[in-house]
Image 1 (cartoon, rainbow, N blue to C red):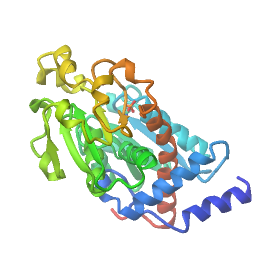
Image 2 (tube, rainbow, N blue to C red):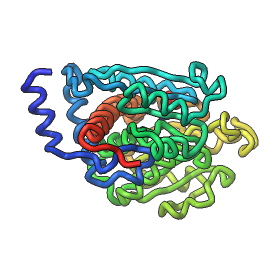
Image 3 (cartoon, rainbow, N blue to C red):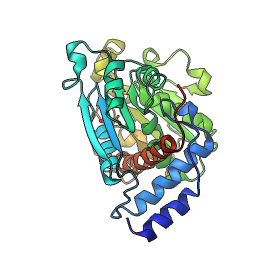
Image 4 (tube, protein in one colour):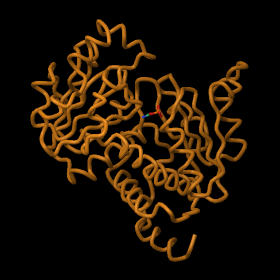
Length: 325
Ligand code: CP
């Protein structure tokens, strides 16, 4: 890294540190933490060709006990592009197949001097459990139906990049809300931003505790979409049994798929978002995927920058202070 690049990156950082050692829920992030992550992400994004080797000498390990395309590849690329050594563990390659506990696996990886473990698991609370027992920083890359904090942060960046301040902007979240960890982090961040939050789905896919997020339930897209600044479609998660909550996918799509006609009901400045993978013509019509205000691929692009910022800040935090257990 040239001394000029280093100086300009450090200038944006402005001596700020995260208040946390682990990111297992967006609830633990202060507004300053979130702003610092997003400001550094914007800088990384503006300088994609520059080699910022701020993680040189560090090891970042991804432990994906559930499949992933976006999250895993973007964390690995982020770590590599910042100069870290990366190792990837999956359910197929992990010793958990031989009966080792997830905790013992994590302790083993910690003994290999990893700086950060990025963990995806089908069980809610896994990342948080590990964070309480492992001296290494843990990032939750999705735990069951609970949360997906780095996805929430990249979603927040995507919304802020388009709309600026989000206070009193309306987001309509559509689809399989009940099973969605994407929803778990998104709704918490939207609440912190003081957005109007509308949920639109079959009643069977509505979490019972949705009112704690200050959200309003509207059962039809016709009534929910007008006044929306953000339309956020969630995937029907068949791997979590979502098919048992709707008559069939065709019937679901008839009422909740975001079609061009339905997207036209939203504000003319509204953006369409989805965390991916998108099930075309069930979650979002194929016809909308190339729409200029469909930000699905922008979300992916933002993910790389956000994850670079997150990894750098977490690695630095552990360098400065021992994580208390
Ligand atoms: N958005 C998301 O978590 O996608 P992957 O499952 O591909 O990581």
